[in-house]
Length: 183
Image (tube, rainbow, N blue to C red):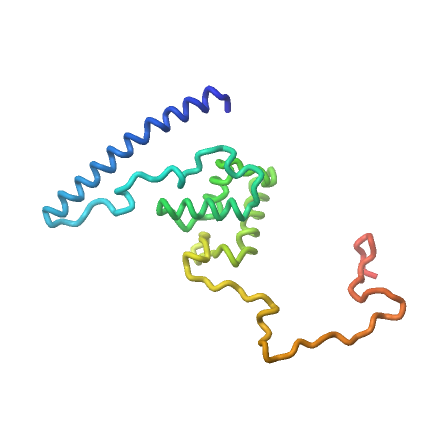
């Protein structure tokens, strides 16, 4: 995007803030009138404040050259702050691109598969809900998976291997040659 267009967008965004503040004040007034009349409030609490700009992805380079999990956590945290969580992989993908994340493969299908795999592998941070959307484990009081070393109780001694290396010096794990073929 050219500098001129970027500057114009920033000017227009600056004009939006006072409009949003006026809308919020009007919604607050309407809720106060509803309360006074004894009727149900028309606007939820989340709509009665102007959203902080820290919850918005405002720069096109915000996620440039940053680790994926860091960016994912930032996106989900911001969505939670504005009441739009959990999020689908597609929503997360779009926001990452908007923020300048550049490490996805060129094909969207490949990028989406990689994103879903990353979200699925990081079970200590992210959780996939039954509806297919993703959130942060900390929102759902999820217990972090125990490390394998922690699974053994302290009263059980850890057995040390007494096996001796093979006589020819080859390691037992080396069953593939350099060409990736099984020996």
